[in-house]
Amino acid sequence: MIEYGRMEITDCDMAAKMEEELFSDPWSKKALEDAILRCDSCYRAAREDGKLIGYCGLYLVGDEGYINQVAVTEERQGRGIGKELLSSLLSAAAEKGMKACSLEVRTSNQRAVRLYESLGFEKDGVRPGFYDHPKEDAYIMWKR
Image 1: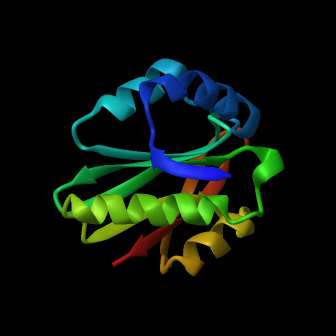
Image 2 (image 1 turned 90 degrees about the vertical axis):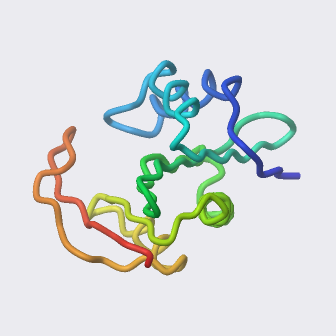
């Protein structure tokens, strides 16, 4: 059974390993720990049998959120875990006063774009050359 809850410092070892496996420009364990400990952050985790299988997070700036992390282990992708995690994150951030939320996503990552659209995000522009490794544009998406 998958359990959703607050991401903890103890999750950062596994999260850093997931970063290495999933992303071309991964966050370090220290960067993840620092992000979780920020007073303006909100992070959620998905665990199965006590093992981290996904996480996501955002920073709050006033009444706006900026999603900076969304990760689900490769073998668990496509099963609704990311959507449940993001729904949980958006609810938790709304309780902290968030009224709008933005993110960037690779223009080639149509699976992620569809996920974000299913949660009410809309494309609101493009950031040319936003990503490295490989260099790629990003859609700017907002949920207002």
